[in-house]
Length: 143
Image 1 (cartoon, rainbow, N blue to C red):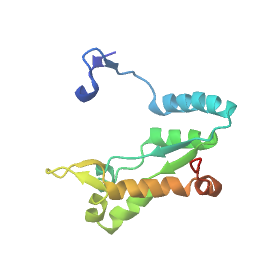
Image 2 (image 1 turned 90 degrees about the vertical axis):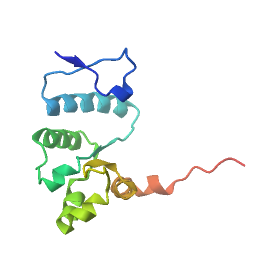
Image 3 (image 1 turned 180 degrees about the horizontal axis):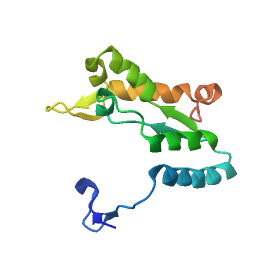
């Protein structure tokens, strides 16, 4: 199993990351199952948010099989699932320029993290999956 610095910005010289040969969908589902068992004890609902690299929309990459596996098992376990795939696929059908507005673009034209507009889209998708009463209840400070 190779060992490498996953990302030098997050490495302190002592932390090494190891790659593992596995089936990503099954591994993720197993971890979601473990988490769900712990959350269920306290009746804590959970949600997963699935995001994709910006270039995958331009290249018309289909959703990877392992992501399909994770979405299926998360739904089967009762997780709330927010998947940006459809909304951003609709945006890229309008124009590539509109898609680029949702990402911070590098000077060379590569897709970076989501922009404020992209973050607002994700936040609206998450909000649409929250129960109405959960959004309406606000904790007010004590006088």
